[in-house]
Length: 435
Image (cartoon, rainbow, N blue to C red):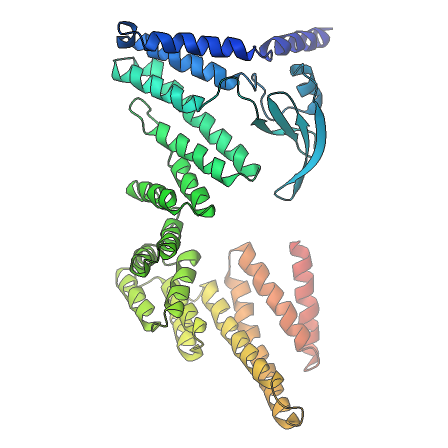
């Protein structure tokens, strides 16, 4: 009986809490608070601006009327009195959702029937209500309002922007997502807000870059760098892409050089740097010079030699690549990626030979057989470093990659010796156990 009473009481409470107020009432409240803020005497009082901020926030929240993502469709139906005017199945980022259309919002339920995304389609009051609310609270703070009356409200506005940004991102509107992330970042640095949101600044730049708004992307990535927020070096790679989009090759090189020195393991920096030097037909030794500077600061860092090896692989200088990988192993005999790099050199050499072999005239069958024999030997030489990589690695994804190569290599070699057939079966079982 208590459970039934509790459920009924909850349902009644929810129906009250989720009641949406008329848009006209929201507009009237905003107009009244705005009129007070424009009054010469009232405008000098912090309370006037706090009231305006609250009016904007109430109007902003009204279309959703306290609907919280995470409820199931049945509960949502109990909370939200309005019935959907249309329902359809939509795909968002490879996942299916049921979209329910209402007068003010669209609600998206995932395959489990749980409300995952809400989208306001008809605001109660037009305009950037979050931005106007933030301005009002900032003005109140300027006039001497107490921290407790401003700080939590500014934080709530930044959070609202952030949530709207993620919703827009999920819905595929990256331009709008960038605007909202920017809003969250900007509000979080206003006087009176005690929590700075560097994640919002990063996301504002990330989404801006995706829609080729290079100026905003550059501005907000640099805001992150000013706070030593580098996303493990990824910002340097992104800034290099922006510089190249603006045809500033020198700036791109400088960003990558700085990033590589601080983050020698960052794959994006390395890839961008190699591609940049290859596209400009410059000597890869110049990249190695940058690595040498990093080696001076970190002489016992084997990953620097792995990076160097990858650079030489990119220009098919396999002898220098192997020397670099071997130096990494000399520094740390358990460095998995150096073994991976050595094995990859053998595979790259084999690929090059296969290209030459397959271009032969059909009458050059003796050369064909010679090249095939060399490919087989290269495959054999790749087995041991891949096995060592698997043995020493602590990274599941690296072990899986090494095991996959070992399975495929031993399959290719199965007719050379029974041991390769046995090894193929072994690594096939290993891979199956990982899935």
